[in-house]
Amino acid sequence: MLLLSSKKDWFGNIRGDVLSGLVVALALIPEAIAFSIIAGVDPKVGLYASFCIAVVIAFVGGRPGMISAATGAMALLMITLVKDHGLEYLLAATLLTGVIQIILAYIGVAKLMSFVARAVVVGFVNALAILIFMAQLPELTNVTWHVYALTAVGLGIIYLFPYVPKIGKILPSPLVTIVVITIFVMLTGWDVRNVGDMGQLPDTLPIFLWPDVPMNFETLQIIFPYAFALAIVGLLESFMTATIVDELTDTKSDKSREAKGQGIANIASGCIGGMAGCAMIGQSVINIKSGGRGRLSTLVAGVFLLIMVVFLSDIISLIPMAALVAVMIMVSIGTFDWSSIKKLKTLPISTNIVMLSTVAVTVGTHNLAYGVVTGVLLASLFFANKISHFMYCDISYDEETNTKTYKFIGQVFFNSSDKFYETFDFKEVLDKVVIDLSRAHFWDISAVYALDKAVIKFRREGTEVELIGQNEASKTIIDRFGIHDKPDEIEKVMGGH
Image 1 (cartoon, helix red, strand yellow):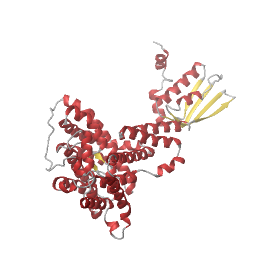
Image 2 (cartoon, helix red, strand yellow):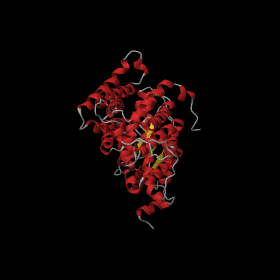
Image 3 (cartoon, one colour):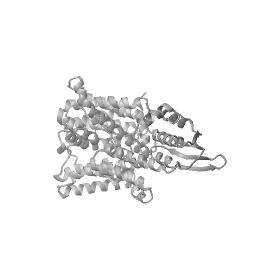
Image 4 (spheres, helix red, strand yellow):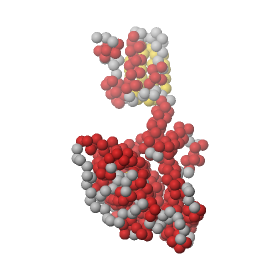
């Protein structure tokens, strides 16, 4: 059952979870508003979504301590839909996104994470750290010196406060930073940009809304491409975030349950007028660094977010953006894998290319999905190239019987099939050729095609060919797709009738 969670997940770290949840809630407000602006919708659409997704995922998610809400990666995919068809179609697409994610969860999409190489994960994390930092730059350009001073002081508090005796370990330094800088600006009266300048905060609780769109095939045609893209990117980012939080906390997560949970959370979000969302690496790192570990931290973040924007909006709107920028810069620094820079000298060139390509494409397109797909494809190609070099052949000749034995060792597939074929010497006059596959494995049709070509060519020269030693899997694929022992098939290939 999705809702079954251990007592430890909820009440094993109450103080840390409540305090970190408060920090996350404060950091979520400007981000949710900013993502709403990116998508072209009212700020409350992002804020309601963040509240709803965080609360729902606390109960049904597969990774305690991970924060899910409205995200920039998802907002970027919504721009065209909102522009061309409006908010109601976005809400319908959000509902469909949730349904697709639940279907994908039952199909077993979580298993696809095993195809994502470590270099891709590192590249993804580094790219995200860069994007988080770049997202803060508009708040640091064309501003007065006061903003730079506040940001610097904020970073100082974040990194130095933990060293304060006794209370340094109790209170999360990002929360202290936000409170201290807000009070300081109120006392000095400095004119700096604050949360209230980002947009109007909602003043009412969300209500149940069913998208006002025609329930027909035409609507499905409009929303399905967007919903499918949102579902894939949402799950990809959520799985990546879960992997990173797993490493930070040295615990395991249930990614299949996470996929179902993301789907349920998005359906709930669409039903209260919110946009689609997913796990957030930046906020999850804030949560972990601030001491959050359990499901309570995610629930508290969602509940505090709603309470603050609806009932405490006058106070929240006074928080200087410089304080939140300092927190997000800390997240950026904490997210980046600095050891990966040192390892560039020691790791294989192929690994470095995969990592750097993932970073370059992600930062260049501002699309995490493109970066990950690029990294996975490159990693697959490098792996295929590497494993093809492990195939070699031990050749022996028996003069008495005029027989040559080719004993292959290794993997035969699309990238090594040419090498397999070129190993044979077709110019020799032999009575018999033995192809020993006892230490080889055939993976695909390209390998079978190379074998067919070799056997048929030898037989054309009048040489007897014997195949020995195929393992069960290789025998199955050769029997199914091979034609060298099927005269009718050979006739068709050779142009016979």
